[in-house]
Image (cartoon, rainbow, N blue to C red):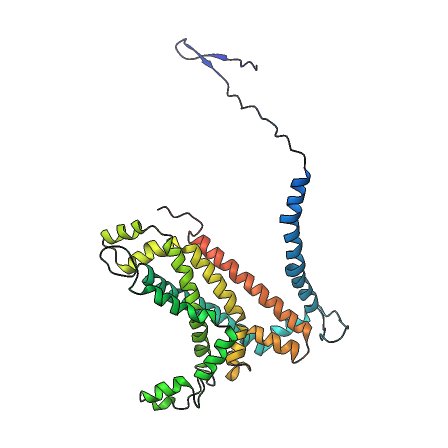
Length: 341
């Protein structure tokens, strides 16, 4: 047993006090257990193998693409001359590529915001948007609305693009036919995808239409996890629907919204299938051209795989920056803090 010596100190008035010095708790060294075959096999199978697959099929292609971007490789010959950052200089001085990048930025700004807001509204209506009296519930026949809204997501993207291309057709399209029958003769032969003022808006509408149901279901799942007592307490306190959504629904499904925003932003940075199906040439005055389309043209039409690889690297970096900004904004606005119920 360790002995502790006490010190006697004399204070004013002749009295004495006994002071016991602080003692640190004993430190016990944790003995490392020897590795067994079970532990090693677990690490290899469940950690080493997935990591090796990820490095081989995800990280290594990115490294290869960056290597190709530093060459003048045509893609159809073994000759690869190192040219350094020349491809990147060409990109940022190319008006067409910069136009495509600007279109992607416009999509990143508009698509996630519009899609998430509409999805949140629909999700709120089908879960807690019913009668303001009695039990908390959604609108009548909310299950039917949920199925109808989710249906467009089940259709392949290329099929959606072809279908809406026919709807937008200026000569016999359904949209112009409906508008003309309502007396709007100015839309008789209007080319929605052929006018640079409406081509991007019409394309964004198609993408929002295709994804709004999926994110509505995602938010419905999040709202269903919120205790009904919170909505009832808000109702008793006199909070309206908008106040309830802002103060209860949105903070408690914040992680769902962040995930939806990142996925929708990544889609906006790509958007190749929708753009290629609706306007394969990039639209009038390149109004709907995106970076992935320009990458495809450069690689398979012009045979400049080195330059196309540089476009891919720029697109990957833009995606990482976007995701990082979303996480940063969420952290700065208090999204990393737990919401107390």
